[in-house]
Image (cartoon, rainbow, N blue to C red; front, side, top):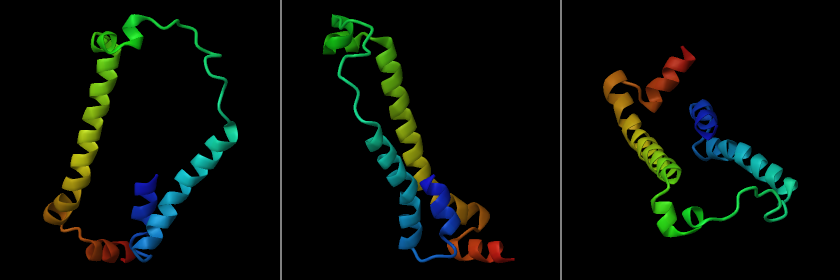
Amino acid sequence: MGYVLGGFFWPTLWLAQPLYIASIPGFLLVLAFLSIGEPERGRIDSLPETARRGTLRGLSRNGAYWTATLGMAAMTFALGGLSVWMPTFLPRARDLTPDRSQERRIN
């Protein structure tokens, strides 16, 4: 949501203002979570702790743990790469710079 709001307001506002606007959804989400409260610890746990889930040796043999961990690492790598690559790709391939994008939006 922050990327969308920041990109939408970038051509019309000064640099810091889109950053402030993009932080509003996150701030509202924090307020919503603070109003919920923390549940009682262990109240809804349905599975007992086992050596497979509670120790490092058990986690190293847990396929679901590895799938989730490697999936998150791949997602972080891809988003980091896109955030570095996309700003250089668009000006080169589409001649889309901040000044030109503002002209295209006005016309």
